[in-house]
Length: 430
Image (cartoon, rainbow, N blue to C red):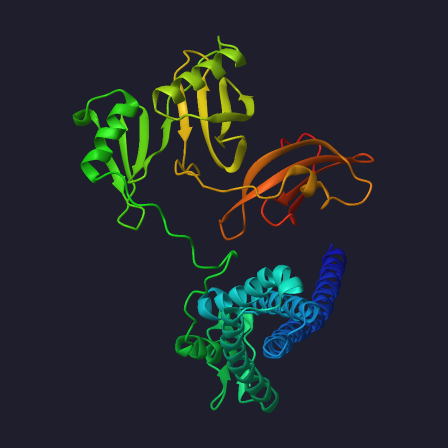
């Protein structure tokens, strides 16, 4: 018995020793892998910063050269270079190993510079730059050059060790950097705080100065009366849920299970919170109800763009019609409950009653000349679309078939040049 017990102890000790050895080997392997991961992460962060610095420098050079361009194709080429480098810089900055949302001004500058160059490229190819555009490019070039200089100095500081790259390990360990060194994020944030952004540029692009909003039509008291009339209740039956003290001045009221939001422009949205029962109405009946409701509320000259059934609710989208043109980006929607025919939802946040006043100076036959050779339209109509800067454009919409591909090509009715091309995906409503 003693021999068996001793034998078991020896066996257990042997297993324990083997386990400790295996754990030690695993720890050694994991430590080696962790070191590799650290090196890879550091290399990736260094590469991201190098790419950001190179791209901002290239952006600065493209903007600087554009000031001296007089030939249309050269103007377009330099704009394309500036846009590509701004996009590369944005991407690289976003992958740096620290919270880049704090660098709002610097990221915003890259967005504006890239978008401005992208917008100019289209017209600069044929017309070159105007005096105003050249002045804007000079300003952007100056800011980009300063930004590039700061990044180049930081590259040198990273090389001599006076600045170190951020890492998740340092951040999680809450360890201060060595004496005499500073984190890259701290240096960039210090520059961000002293960075002076340009005044908002006026151009027809995503970050351009927005067009002036139409004058406010209703006071706060009138807004409440409008909300009451829209929901069919007395003003005193409305309960103010919340309001916005911004430039839009929205107010949201509740009456029973209905929530309605109004702004100085008019009613923006309406929704019900009740559960809809089993449907008893058809899609055609829902459309009739929606059209009657819109007519009662003073919404006229609308065209049905799309309709679908979602459960027991019919959702219908309408677009404004101006003359013989459909305003594709000026639309509203109505939801009809199919159990009792009540208005379950309404949204007019993207709807504007003010007419665009646009004119088509190019006829359809002339506009067709902008289509690719050999491509004939299956359908054509006048439409109003919006540019990236929210400017209304008078266009001809040509629906074309190219093999098994369906296309929508939009030609500007004032210039006769293409404004937009869409490829229609299967099941998509144009």
